[in-house]
Length: 260
Image (tube, rainbow, N blue to C red; front, top):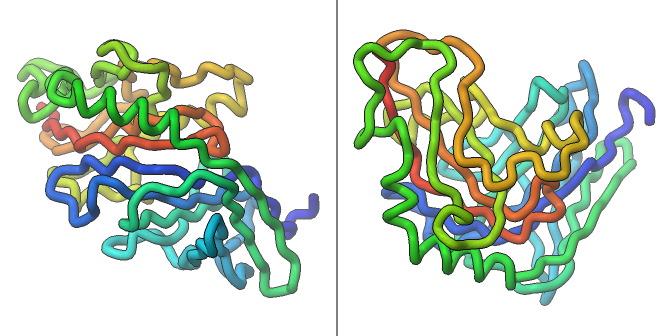
């Protein structure tokens, strides 16, 4: 692979149960995501012509080649640890039909790459049913949170976040993906400016651990936070630590805490 060659690493086409508080998105949504292989030093959006997803019964949607932002819920992200770009669109048009979905990336020079996956709704249905049955217990378990703030004498380093997983409440195995950012409300949470990303996908790549993130009920933030500052985090539940394995994601409510 040359330094300017665009190759897909993996794609995600899956159901998303959108449980963010007061969100304009409905509960039953889906997303398309395509992650490219690392391209150090290359500003990839400048050479992209189009990114489109295709699926059953004429399904077609285009991913916007601009930095991800609201209210479009569409665009690209950049992961510095991997030096790679990835695109995502969240769609309010319900869960996916089962079947094969393909995402194709076309470049301005005529080169292209595409990748497909099969959507299976059984794991999605089972996980969401369990989550809804136990939602209050799971939400009450988050710490720290507005309901369970950090103690006044807490330090700024190695702050621990914890919660209950689906497995803890009698549900299926699942994986936890956690993002932390400076924010005091959901609209301030910037996925392109994270304080910490517990990236289980990256962890699996570099360690080879196929269980990275499975039934993970907490993390320790590995950096010192700012004093007297509000931080938010949310834990995404999914059934795969490889994007192509994911049939669903559950976006749980943001949790907020203030450092002493």
